[in-house]
Structure formats: structure tokens, C-alpha cells
Image (cartoon, rainbow, N blue to C red; front, side):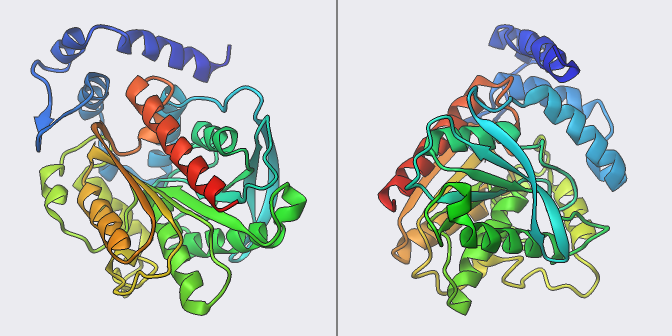
Length: 347
């Protein structure tokens, strides 16, 4: 058993304790806010995290090591039968590492889905959402390409977005060789990856280039300049709080960069008509929940087919908690099923 598997097994055992016990160990009463009750397992993890050093006090290198260790203990491996291949794909300034997830039962009519991981543009890597990407491939029957885009502050805006854009174009134009319909691709991402996905869908429409069949946005940031009520209500949430968000943005944007550039604030775009169908999922305990929910409503009002789900007991980043939080695992399964249904309609 690997060290990550051992750590996940121990943590799973602890988190299997009865909810009252977990809440007692977390300080007592349930965490209740805005009419929502936080999953007791997440409450326990949050209490432990608050005893440690906050990410906003770390260097980017320290934050990457800390988050990688945490996600290794809380994540899950791809489903059995999913084949994982390492490869390189074009980026905005040279080739980038990537992983291709092939389902055990391929459906050649389903488009390839390009996925960008979370991390505020500063942390995260190909391991961060490995389990979720594997689930997506198995649920949809199509290949999923996860992109290791450049991170800030070594590579600030728009480097990460340009890497995802280049990878999307490559996947779309080489789809047939990857076992998917030629000339088609979907785009997806969680958190910052969701920002990239939403902005990419809009850019393809603006320039008249073949765009994605689907935009899969999981607890996305769609406006780096947003200050909605949830930014205050969940300013101290785990694992994403307001201080960490400001830390991310401070590293991602250079002085003089416009946080309201369409690539940084696709949620502010006036005309949303004609964009691809969307599957949008949010977490109840998340500073970003209001902006993502508002974007889902605006897309629907513009005539875009939208499947929206809010998982009230969960927190930001839940795609990386499927190994130890049953509610997160169930949410990921539903999101993958919604994506599969949408892609099947367009097949």
C-alpha cells in the first residue's frame, strides 16, 4: 500500500466516527450558516486546518507542498479500468505535461473533454483532480485530457489560461487520434480551472472559432473582482477563505493587470447567448457560491441549456475530497452523470 493510500485509510477511519463525535472533536455544535449545515467530516478537517499555518502566510512553494500532501490524503484514485496515459500537449509558450484518461468502455461518439484543475492559478497539478478526471472518463465514455498549465507567480496572467486554450485547440483538432469525434471537444475545470473554461467558451464565440460542446464548471470563479454577499458570509470558510483568495489573486495578477478583463471576469460579459450548454456545480460553504450561481441564472436567461446543482453541505474543493467524504463522492458522481447526459445529447 502506498503512503498516500495509507494516509487516506487512516483519515477515512477517523472520519467514519459518528457525526456527534466528529462535531465534539471539532469544538461542539454543528457549523450552520445561511440555512446550510456543513458536513461533519469537513467540519472536523476545518478545525484541524485552523490549528495550522494558513496558506495566505505561506510562500507559493510551501503552499504547493502542503496542498499536495493534503489532497493525497483526501483524494481518490481513478476508477478501476480507466487507463491513464502521460503525454505532452502544446501550451501557450511550449509543450506542457498532460494526462489522458481513457474509459474502460469507450463511446467513440462522445467528444474529448479538456479539464483544468483548481488552485487559484498558483497551486495544483495533474494529481489534484486525478480521481475526478477518471470518474468523468468512465461516466461519459469519452477521453478526458487534464492539462498541467503554468502557475503563478512564476508565470502570471494570462499564462495559465493560454496553456489551457492551446491544449483545447490541440485536443479538438486531434480528437480523432484520441478516440473521439473529429473536430469536437468539451471544456471543464474546477475553481480557477472553471474560470479558464468559462472564459475559453466565451472567447471561442467572440472570434468565431469552433467552441466546446459543453462547459463543465465546478465551483468556478467567474469574476476575480467579485464582492458578493457569500464573499463575506463564508470569508472564513475551509479550505478557501477570503484571505486565501486575495493571496491567489495577488500572485496571479501583475500590477496593472485588469481583474475585469473578460479572461478574468467572464461572469460580467453582457451577451451570453449562443454559448455552449453548461453543467455548473457549487458548494454551499464557499465564498464563490453567489457568483457561480448568478452566472448559471444568467446563462439560462440567455437561452443556454444549464444543469445547476448546489451541494449545501460541502465546501470548495470537494472534487479532491472524494476519498474520505462520502457526500463529496456522491456529488462528483452526480456531476459526472450530468456531464455524460449533456455530452450524449450532443453526440
